[in-house]
Image (cartoon, rainbow, N blue to C red; front, top):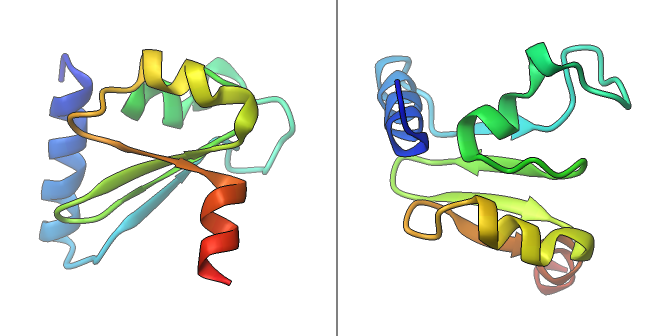
Length: 97
């Protein structure tokens, strides 16, 4: 798969095949390490986001990437808004409460 859009579509196809409603992609590795090795850069691989804090949620028709205020500009320059909604963690958290 050569593009981030292809990777997102492939994940959605796998979700459908596995009859799953969605998938969360954290920045952390399988050990919840503070520093993530290059082999485990799942969020960057899927979205293109290279910041040190964030996560993504993929649903059948929507996808969003969640970052804090430090990455507001970076996420917009690295992640395609055609495929991903940008969500600010403090703003999203306060709206849902």
